Length: 400
Image 1 (cartoon, rainbow, N blue to C red):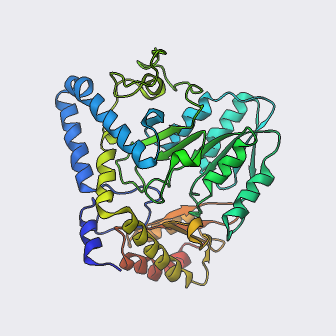
Image 2: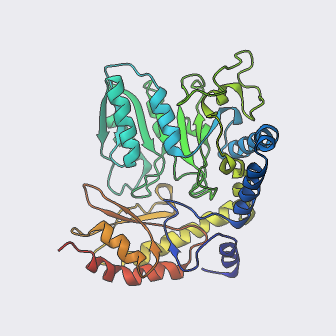
Image 3: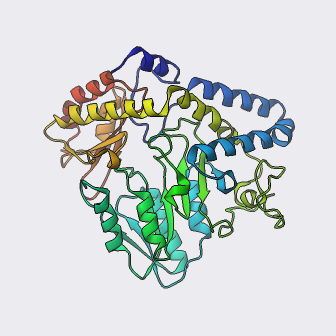
């Protein structure tokens, strides 16, 4: 499995050889060519800010927007760069005006910070916030669509869900869910934090009103790069989180390229004054790096490693797999339900010191989860190391 090709690709990563980073689901390390390019741009920004921001940045930003939109299967005139998916979703939640009374509907597996985001939005607009349970280990995407259909009511004004669930790595049938909601006049907002690069993605085909995601996870762009994609008909529904030079839009040509490397419509919400946007500008390099390895090859590699995780950790009696096996429902993140009584902080500490293993841990009411994320640069040896030391570390992390 760990052949010379993948070992060479691993060597092109900014990867600490003393660490088994099995947690790309939280943060991905940076490829060396991407790091070198962003460092080059920051060097110029530091030595001559006026030249960089005024003369060079607009062209670089437009180029990055076109590359990312093409990679996502979308239109560059609908793509807003953000610092991360949290910024993208907050932009929507802070600007949307929904009919009251009513409700905002979420699944019971949403990322905690995003739950709080919609909790605040509901409070501000006099709406209810309601969550519903997803099926446990579904075998077919239709089971998930049925759960959404049963949960939606005439009170539902907005539906928020993750394309790939952070706790378990379950991949939801986003296109079918959005179509279901659209047929009932419900606004759809999708958290695609884990989708770009981990799974094939076509944002136009998904049809969400708003689709936000990170580029610093599976796409391996620098931290500080994310986006929000606007579905058709949603171009003028948002308000910026802060007013800057994009505020005075030219309504005679809202989608024409402007002097900021954007469009007047996009700059309205994207431009936030003076800031370092170099992470956005090197997204094309991040795409090109993995493109050179081949997306199909990378995803086959991810699945091989995920299968290795499923097999090796599945042999630990006290762990119960929490990610479905069908390929249309899973990707490169495999989760296991931990036995009761495990202190998550102690478990994390025990894996890091002295073993230097990074994994994801999720606290949940229905049982805490251990999540393993495997990208192309991970190895079977790293997975084997985790499987060997985990039983002893878990035993030492039981609350007394």
